[in-house]
Image: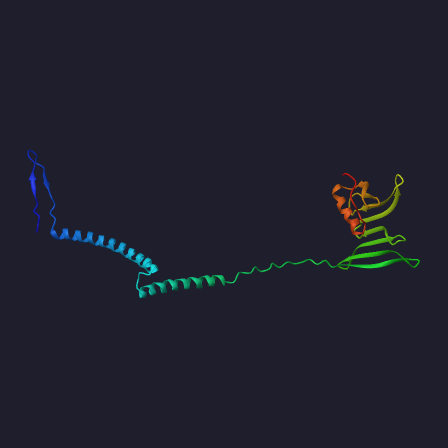
Length: 236
């Protein structure tokens, strides 16, 4: 059926209004496209709802046994695959850090020691220190009658000399042991320092001709040679 074109003229004005002709086939085609879009949207929504409902129904036991078995096997298979992936990740070897090679510098040092004998009695010991078979220092230690160290001499091949000597002093009717340290370095001015020890080995500084930052090294030198130092009684 055709809808005829209608034309009319408004009164007193010569303007014509035209209405476009629409065929029945075009009208039906447009309605069909709209219906198809609606059906697609509705179908998609229904499909999602149905799938969701199947999962929920399967969990609650409302589906048939075969359907539940199919869903159950799918879920089980998925879990098995995930478990295998987890196990594989756990069993992956942990990369081990390779140890960094360090080269240790081994100093080829050794000593030669001989006793100093006088009148058939040991009065001291001489120690020669070598590095790579080269003599670097000769240390001489002399003893008193009780085999206690009295004097320590260190002579280095580079010109450095150190002497540590023990003497006895009496001050205000009280006896003290004084260790006198004297050093002639390879370069620079000489250094001297006296440690006056009481009966408890607590000490005061009787003489200081060194830099403050050198005192600890001198104390360590005395300690390394068996000289016992107690508390320091001198305020620096």
